[in-house]
Length: 492
Figure 1 (spheres, rainbow, N blue to C red):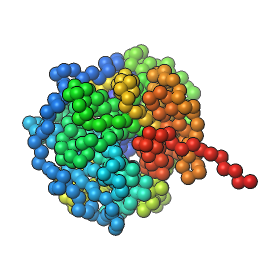
Figure 2 (figure 1 turned 180 degrees about the vertical axis):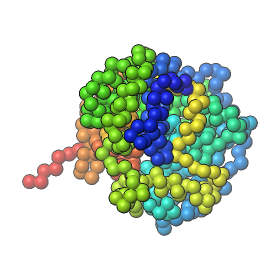
Figure 3 (figure 1 turned 60 degrees about the vertical axis):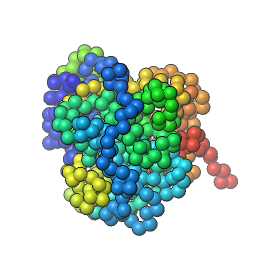
Figure 4 (figure 1 turned 120 degrees about the vertical axis):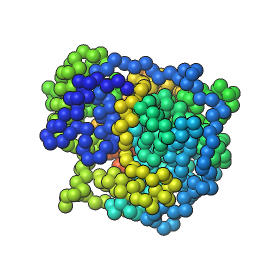
């Protein structure tokens, strides 16, 4: 990725005692915020195309060190009693010559694991770990505030699917390469290629899943990752004239699907939710012409002004309190997956950096981090839009779910709606509320080939903020149905 120096330098300035690039440790929101803002005054990149020289060979099975038996986890340190499912973790080599391997955590369903579909999950960033999904969102466990013990997530997605969390690309989390130059040449293409190679080789390790329905899902920059790996799967199935991977659908939450609409939707969300002034909103629309390179310096100035006006809020969820771990006012919520603790990242960092935990996970000892910014300096390619890929997937019968927590400001619901509108789809089922536990869970509209769902009261990490609603949503999608309609109760 080419970064405009002027914009990047301005974004790196310290304001009000805080550097824009550092509010504690990195997380997806901060990394993605910087990544997208750096592109506001860039010229557009071409849509990612997978050329013949980049093709993934159908015989690309790599020599592996691991096996299903050795990857099985006997117990995680501090896990609660009564764990009634099998879980596995380890490495899948995606390039034996380079020594590049991706780390995964796999949780089978407690019931119906032999028939439930597979879900392959990617967190975004780019360059952020999918163990965030496993340990703070949709995985079977959450980390308690002691950073040493776990509690059960009653709304985990492995209740309805067998879920694989893969840390991608190499250099993220426990994933690695023995070829250091790999870290200077990451990008959308290489990430998609490695993800495809991962799942092909993972299925060799778990052959009982080879014919199972597969859904690829993810959030934020997963709006790039998910459609791109799905495109390769579809291409390789056609090229080999057989179903190598039984892809059925994709799901993207609060995703970066189209950079133009992502940026437009973000700043419109700031303004419509009273986070920016009229003057700043006008300045953004005047000078930040979304890759037209009209006035990058003025654009960068208004980006900084926008950030100053918003203050130090949690942009994952604009109404949630920020973590104040060292303050007596810090909110401490644990052992209850229905409430989201804003300090969860700290607990997860502590837990995953414990030597006993890394041993139990079969991970190579390393300092685990949520995101790895260093590999972004060499991010060699990124597409302006995933919409053509999504359109192609739809035309080939792949089911599409786009969903948005409506309190996220960095990849907001407005951005997703603007992106969908560019597809000019025919509405199949009109906009309506849907329900969980007799409450409005959000809103849904079904188009030909694509379903859009909002999750009411959820931030960026939808399963973290609204776990019950997220489980209802994904369960319905996997069943090929829309979320259940909201019915007004007659108490008379």
